[in-house]
Image 1 (cartoon, rainbow, N blue to C red):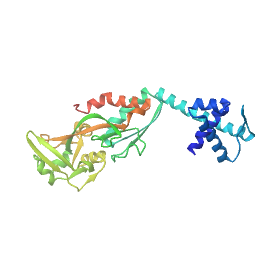
Image 2 (cartoon, helix red, strand yellow):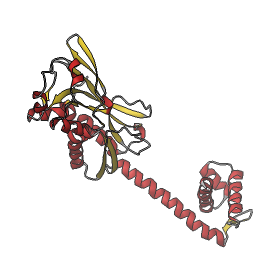
Image 3 (cartoon, one colour):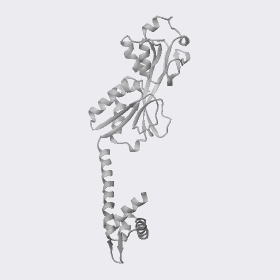
Image 4 (cartoon, rainbow, N blue to C red):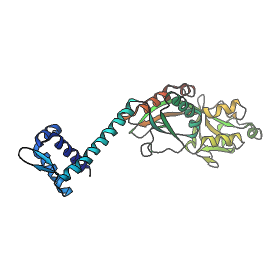
Amino acid sequence: MFKQLQDMALFTVVVEAGSFTVAAKRVGLPKSSVSQRISHLEQQLGLRLLMRTTRQLSLTFAGERYLIHCREMLQAAERAERSLEELKASVSGRLRITAPAGLAVTLLAPIVTDFQEQYPEVSIEVYVSDTVTDLVAAGFDIGIRTGKPRDSSLIGRFLGHYPRRLVASEGYLSQRDEIIHPSQLASYSCITHRAWSECTLRKGKSVFHWSASSRHITDNLLYARQCAISGGGIALLPAFLATDGIEQGLLVPVLEDWQAESNELYLVYPERKLNTSAQERLIETVMRHPLVAAHSTKR
């Protein structure tokens, strides 16, 4: 089929050139190759398209009918190319983004809002999930990920180190002995994110490797946060999810003297060579947005 589409285009060039010789020069092929391909096309169709003489070419009735559709095909290809040129030249079109729930709510939502105010011609589809999906296979233009992407086909832009904090409700902690060392965490109820079942805690030169309980596991940090607020136990949350709750008195820091290792966040997207203008502008907006700097510690 693809070769036939090429031969349809070649047939149109031959007709418009008026000779195999001129057509061959235009497409950069030997005259014999052009003639053979048109003959092969006629054999495939089972009808003669051109009447050949030593001096000129003329269309058969079938050739006239076929030429109409060949030209329509080429015009459609030209329209398609023009539409993409317009897409490259203007900030418009559609972008599909994926991000974990916590980041989508606290970071991505205001960034996307600011972006659309500046570029109203761009439609945005945001898929919120803590499950890591194959960006290319799922058709996403941009994703926010924890950790540097391992896929070599993806570009990873470092967003920063995002601190994490152990928190619980005051009501939950008030019913138990004061917790002063990470080793005590084993006797407390913990709401554990599936990807964060282990964590390193540091206090000066002291290091404690904590393996969280598997009694209550989730794949959503917003759920873990709400469970902690509701008195369900201790949760390890990124600072951007914990800070507001602490300031509002809904959460209390646990083991403040012990620093949990931070998260590295990356903006990821497929190879940058063929990105649309809209995608490039969104990447720039994310990287330069004040919220990115506010929630992270830059290297």
